[in-house]
Amino acid sequence: MAAYRRAAVNEIDVRPTAGDDARVGEPDLSRLLLEASRVLGAEIVAGLHERGFPDARPGHAALFMHIDRRWGTRLTDLARRARMTKQGMMLLVDDLETRGYVRRVPDTDDSRAKMVRLTARGRRFVAEARRAVAAVEARARRELGERRYEALRDSLEFLVGGGEGVEEA
Image (cartoon, rainbow, N blue to C red; front, side, top):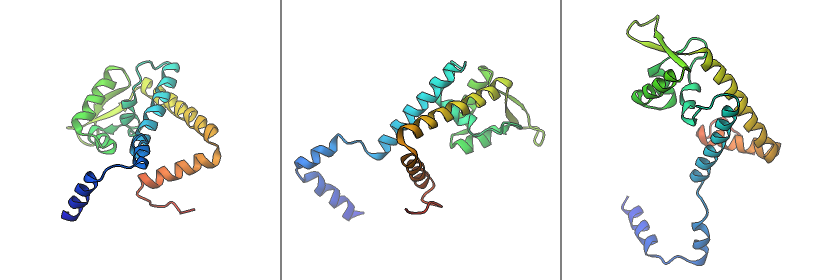
């Protein structure tokens, strides 16, 4: 740890060179991934707006991606799957329930618990969201070309999965 601190202090004391200035404006990988996520998410939401869901928000995906579309899912399971707090998921469920996308019903296995289920409107939303995502992915595939698109997907899966199961080219 002390060696790391010394190296960091020494780097601060070093005067930047002309080559360093060129890198200052270059965004780091995490920034590029975040911006790509925002752009693609906004494109999907715009597609949902066009498909009759003007109240769609990117944050709604945390629930829709993790809910069992047939039987519903406990709020605690939704929170765990989405890597959110139970309180945060409860606020999201409250919002989506008010909008008519989900409803809470008693859990048949545990009378103390509630299941979150999609309403008919919620099921239509999920179907349209799948179409919107497919349209965005098709556009990316067209613009990048097949090889670059597949390389991008493989690389992202490798990074997200910690490098499991993807072979080096």
